[in-house]
Image (cartoon, rainbow, N blue to C red; front, side, top):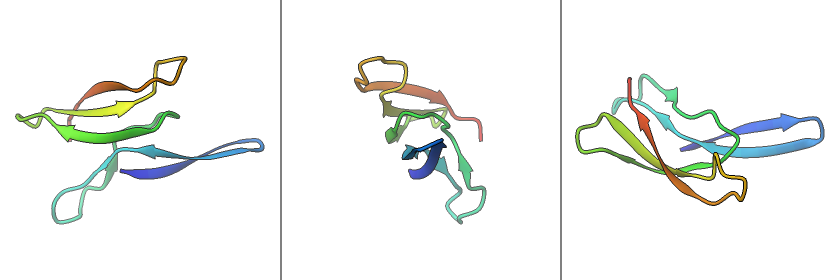
Length: 72
């Protein structure tokens, strides 16, 4: 996980997104690009998906579990 800065006019916010890299540190890439914080990533057993917690898609900002297909 890491932070990316969101700036719009006078508003500034450090947002938490998901990132990935190979074990040797190469291939660093950002996986999520959303204004909601994306937290607590977990790999599926077969490595095809990443599950994470986020408040995206919810007007009340309640956390939900999201699944992302992992194509790296």
